[in-house]
Length: 397
Image 1 (cartoon, helix red, strand yellow):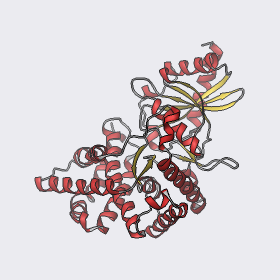
Image 2: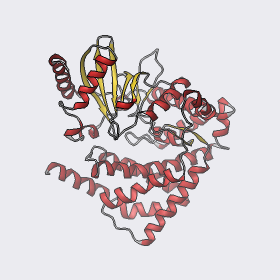
Image 3: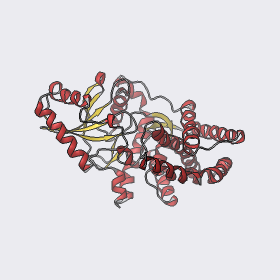
């Protein structure tokens, strides 16, 4: 790499770190990355620059960090003479870009707006992607933009994904890609097991009796059974306000990112990810209205839509609530693991909102009464204490 090229990268990195430039996601968590994970001397930056300039014949003016996420992937915004792009850096051995390519091609064929892949070097873990800009749904919702418009667009795209994804999965084959794997019993159980280990045990330091362990196991089994009883559709798995980008017309809104872990699973999963978002909450009445409107979208489509909309609004809402308990139990564990294992504490402030979702849903369904009681007696009061302890540790390491 030439000296002036290295200079451009250095200047771009310094400028972007001062300005807080992002593509997505965007939170305190993004500032908890270990220093070694993003540094000016990172050899991967030199690799990216060499790939862009020599292999792809693009003159790079500068590179800026675009974002990181809860994995080893990083994203850089590349300012080139012919426009701006986003480079996904997925170090081989830690990340694999092939699942992203599989799902990206499928979603783009359906007509939803995902970043177009301009170039790929799978062996070196590099993708050159369409730049969807810097405006997150979360940012605009928190700023007071009309949620009906934003969620209307997001729900329209979700309906398209669920309907076409259910009826056209065989079309993955012409792309040379296997069907989506099922969101099965093993995956559901493994995800929920993170909560006792990392949230209850590690974060809250909560010892559980044999009876409490048995109660948790029984509740988890109930949630697994309920999840597997739902009609199966394409599941993004993280369809929420930090993975949806506001893009201007005439492009289709929203821009959808972070879909590489998609599976075939419960119809309520992505809906609850969006409407019971771990990063922003809405009144129950409004959420139920959006759920009802989404079911109406599915029914209006007929065929595949009617097949996944349930026999009644009550059944569809039950599916929504119960898969939400499964998801939020998982997230409680993941957010804590990100701190204790990966040194990313930025997700801990979102634990109370996530726990509130679990408490609210458990209180609505008699089958989860014992879990609701356990949370009220043993967990609720301990969470602010645990978060305060971590805050103190970070302030005085």
